[in-house]
Length: 342
Image 1: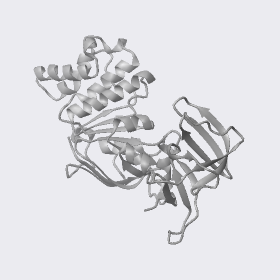
Image 2: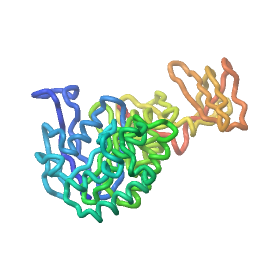
Image 3: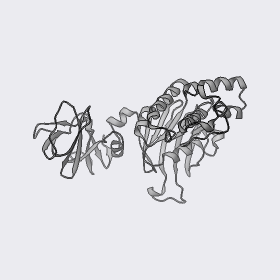
C-alpha cells in the first residue's frame, strides 16, 4: 500500500485564467497508507478527474502526485501499481468467474498455488465461491460487478484500489450488502481504498474519511461526524444530511468579520419553542409529514425556509398555523461568505 500526496491543479483547456477554466482548482491532499476514503460530490464536481489523476489515467496540468514520497506524476497506472474498478463491469465473458479473478495474478507471474489460494479468499469475501466454475457471460449485472470488484482486490501488492461509482449497476437492495462487504474487506486486507460516489449514504457508510467536492474544489475532508456536526462550508451543510442544514440570515455582532453572515442548524437540532423565546424564530408551517419515527415540519419565515425533525410524541402546528422554532444552541454554526467562522 502507499501514502498518496497530491499538490496539483488541472484544466482540460489550455492557459486557464479563471476558476471556471479548471476541472480541479489548486489542492493539497494526503491519503494515508491503508486508509479508506470517499470522494463525494455532484456530477461534474471533479471527483472522477481527481481519481484518474491518482491512477495515472490523467496527468495533472499543474503540480505533482507522490506515492510514498516518490514523484509518480508521469508514471502510468501499471508503473504506479494501481487497481481501478469502473462504473460498469470490466470482465471477460468467455472466462469463468475463477479465471477472471485469477487473470491479474497470472499476468504478474504469481505461482499457481498462490493464485488458487488468493482467488478462494476473494471469492469467499464476495460470496462468489459457488460460482467459480460458471462462465461470466451467463451472470446477472450485479454478479459481474462483484467479479470486477474482485479483480481489483485480488492483488496483494497494489499501491491502492480505486473505485469509480462501482455500485451504479447494482440492484438497490444489494448495494447495502456490497458496501458492508467492502468495509469488511478493507478491515481485513488493510488496503488503501479511494471510492468515488455522488451518494452520501455510500460515502458515509464506507469511508473513514470523506472528501466533499464541488465545482472543482475539495471543500472539506472529515469523518461522517465532522461533516454532519461542523460543516466547514455551506455546500457541505446542504449536501450532507436528509434534509440538509437550514441556513438563515444572521445579523453581524460587534467584533465579527464583515461579510454576508448565516446561521446554520441541522433539522435534527431544531426544536419547538415558546413564543418570543430567546434564540427562537417565528414561522408559518407550510408542510408537515409524519415519517413514523419523527415529524418533518417545513415552515416559512419571510424569505427563509426552516425544516425541523421533531419527536413523534409531539403534535406540531397544522399547515397555515404559526409556530416558534429554537434555532440557537450548541450545535448551531455560523458562516461568513459560505465558510465556517472560527
